[in-house]
Length: 246
Image 1 (spheres, one colour):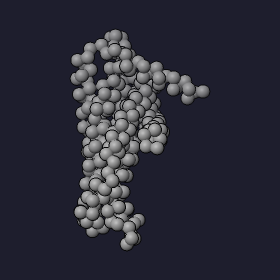
Image 2 (cartoon, one colour):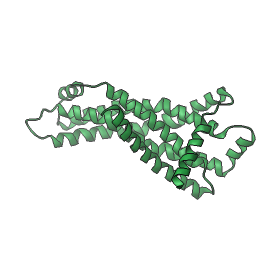
Image 3 (cartoon, helix red, strand yellow):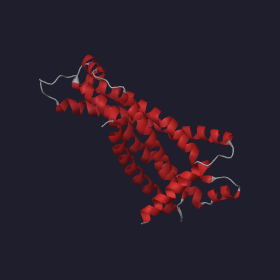
Image 4 (cartoon, one colour):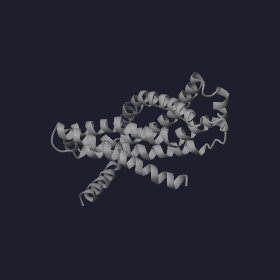
């Protein structure tokens, strides 16, 4: 029954986060800082992975449809749908869970073991709200932007890989991208990322907030937070796909 106790503590933690902030101006400055820490700092890794994954998808798709009956523009369709439906939301979220999530757990966990959170409580500040709410707002605001950026760079990488390797012409690739395009897939990916952003921030923050011990326990909290974040992201992916696409 320990998992039920943990889930209850997590729910109470979420409730505590959304209590009325003491000073909105302070939270505004903190949110801007978190946009830089969580969002802007993640642009590089997301851009690099997206570009090369788009290229890999193009080459692998071309290898799997080496049939004269199948038109080449199917490569563009496969790259587009793979990126829109799964990669730029779910896979990017898993990557962010490993980078951003572990950072959040370590930051808050270190503040807990060094008694900085206790100091905030003594000063009459709600530590959960002060430390976590700006991160949630920053992630909800910027992670969908990372999703859109990932879509564009993945398709760019796929297009360049197709042209440079000669597996598909530019006209055929672009024709495939435009053929039977369902623009809802873009909204679908961004909506999924909103749910993932909440998980990526709150789960590591929960593990860091309630850590006890020293630096070793902080490291373990970071590991547990990444594992559980990935599990919840995959579960949310299944549920959201069933609700929105099926």
